[in-house]
Length: 445
Image (cartoon, rainbow, N blue to C red; front, side):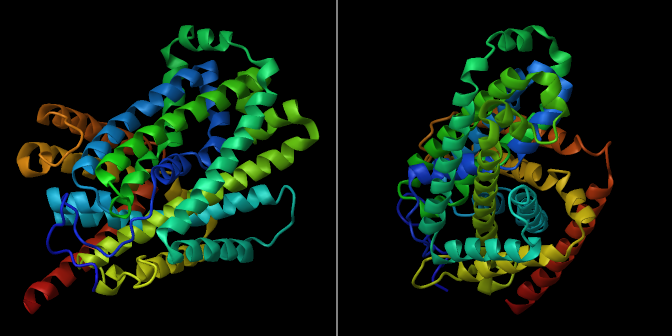
């Protein structure tokens, strides 16, 4: 296998055979593009219903947990950039069982997310074209698979093009609503009390999930210790600007009450400012947002399958690198097949699993734990970090990040315990496989 994990290259990187073709702009668009997806088309309505103008404050506050996570991820990326970083960091600096458990949960959740995003995309396309859902989703998965199989640069450039298209469409929406802008809404948001802000906060947090995606291709970036932290920071900044601008425009144009009762909030706003052009604009924006989110999720999905194969906790062929394209081609095929298999799951189960964010929050928890351990026990790794955070600061950020992840993950338990039970069963199956194969590996030594 060409991606030997033995030995370190200068700068602390392990030789992997992966091609270093991802640029700073690609990283920004990858992180922001993962975050700015389906949520912006569905969250604003329910958030405005409970939070009113307070969602303008809630949007900023919702970014705070992600700032914690982003600082931790940026620090780790400045010291030990890795492909499938959130798995590799946990495996190396926490414990292999913790790393396996968290990523095993993501094996299920990422396949489910791919299907759900595909079906949401078909709902929007259905506004303008009556298309059969399953063949179109399969065709879309095949396109995304081909982009990722041919090289990370191809997939990243596609992500960048889609993100630029989406930003342009949102700019049209914001500019068209400029005559109706109501600056006093910011005053109302601040003076309206904390209660509506706190009610909207759990919903608004969903808007920022995935901003750290830039770290997951660390070994495919030149000068990663500098470029990846910048990619995270700029991606988070871009995401906050987009959400505040779109939220402010929507509240100004139609008001909190109408926005809160709308089934398609952004379509309602566009209809008020663009008339007959509203549906084409919003459908195009939704399709661009959903495809780029699917592309980013698929790219990361293949890479953590690759990392688990390369480290021996899943079948070794997953860790192979294509000799020409420099991509984890076997893992990419498996991610494609897993996503397609999800088409046969019932809608009720898909949305039940998607209704919680436990795997994502556990990923954040595990990465923060790894950073805490680096600060506490690994001076040789700290010495490599380009971000010169003190050990005390890293420990404080990591501890706060772990606490935030646990609190956010627990928020949905009182609403519906069944998704947690399903994930517990899936985790038990994975751990049974892990310990069974571990015994076999030890016996073979």
